[in-house]
Each structure stands twice: as C-alpha cells, then as structure tokens.
Image 1 (cartoon, rainbow, N blue to C red):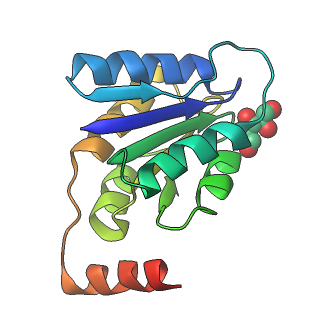
Image 2 (cartoon, protein in one colour):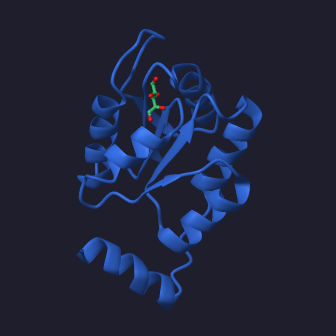
Image 3 (cartoon, rainbow, N blue to C red):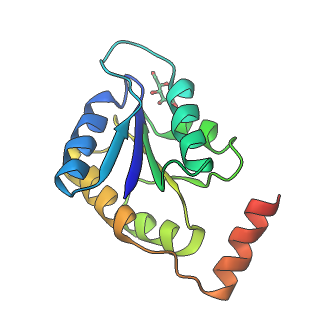
Length: 144
Ligand code: RB5
C-alpha cells in the first residue's frame, strides 16, 4: 500500500518508528517530514500528506503530532480526506469499517510505541465494511 507519513516535533520520534514498521511490512512509504525534533508547525505536514491522499497519490496517510488533534483538524480541511484521531484499537478498526478513514492521526505524547504500532497495524489492514448504511453516511460526508 502507498502510505504518506508526516509529523511535527511532537510526533517525530513516533513517526520514525511507524516508518520502520511499515517498511518492514512491505508498504511503499513516503515520509514528508519533519526530519528532526526541532520545533515546527504541524499544519505544513498535515497539508502535504492530506493533499497527497486527496489527489490519489497515496491510498492512506498517517500523521503524528503531540496530541494528534492539530493534525486531525488541519487534515480534515482538505476535501476528500476523512482523518480519524485514534488512540485505541477499537477505534482503529471501527473508523476503517464505518468511516472509511483515509488518514490516521495520533498523539506522540500520548501513546507508547507498542500501542501506536498495533493501532497502525489494525488501521492499515482493516477494510471498509461496504454496508449500505456506512456507504450512505460516508457519502454524506464527502458530499458536504
Ligand atoms: C506542539 O507543541 C503541539 O501543539 C502539537 O504537536 C500538537 O499537539 C497540536 O495539536
């Protein structure tokens, strides 16, 4: 799967772990930065990743900041992006099955590495349910 990654300084360390994990799984990963723990603006990486997903260059995007919140707010401004802020395994599965989320956001200051990688694994490998009610609801999001 073609997956775009982005992080600010609050998510840099976790983003590096996610990149290593996804590469080991055989995914085609593109890292849009940041490339150090120096302070930077989450917005810039959210826009790069979200636009890449919205225009079809990538099937999915994963964004990490300190809380995941700024990344989520910014990514959801881009038409065609359904970004989900996830910090647990139940939501990781549910947001793929119910929302067909195409961007995952997480907080690098909230999650330990093991749980974050487990969330990534579930989110990447869970399909949209395609049930009529979920198709209808996602359609309403996309139409708005
Ligand atoms: C940076 O200090 C922090 O505000 C950012 O990483 C993120 O949590 C914003 O939502």
